[in-house]
Image (cartoon, rainbow, N blue to C red; front, side):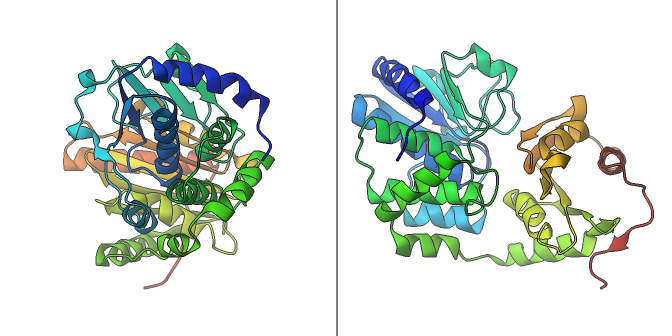
Length: 345
């Protein structure tokens, strides 16, 4: 496995910082995906193998998507809800697969993390951190952690290899989305070490009944514009992972090159954008949609954002939804009419 020269210069600084700490908090994104979970496990492995520090991994939101729940279950991943965390107990705060002030993690804005490792575009607030390793060209944050582990010659056990392999595979959609050679090298390194039976069980994670109900709502509400853009709403949703999952699914439509799915959760409108055309730049689409009222970011082919409702009344919320819908269309240069329903029921 070839290691980036950047890794050579970063690892020593990272380990020295970890060695100065007794208690380390690793913060994942809210509703963490496999890449976020695996990257956190990789960073914890480095801390445990190189230092005496005690590590805690925390997340906000929930773990609802079938594959994510299966990953945590089958690999016995020990992570804690963020609302159980007392931040003052930790002398080092790390973030993986997310950054400060992105709106997709639960770290309060007045807490500046010490370490940030991510593969999304760098945020201004991230520049204030002591240690940063931001590689927006990488397909997954797990790839960065895999390089760290390889450089340090750390033993990558079966559990960690399985998590990292699935994290990279999931975020790059089997190396088919925004992938570079570093991601491929990491996959080739991890595959012989991973538990193939567990990978199969994770990928075939079971669904609860709510999943099928939400999918029915998504398909019923889906509107098709100019035959290649699909926009749908899930309404009020507890399982926020479904928003991105539906956007992914709709992009598999024969003619679609851009999809948007949104839903309401915990006084926030959450939005996912997917595209098969990098020229459309999903990260810029989401930023244009949320504007100054929310936060958002991502990559050229996939992105996510959120707009707080701030305790709006039902009518005000409906009005905001209509405004956002019109903004979806304006951002994509689409007229409000005509459109067709994706399915006729």
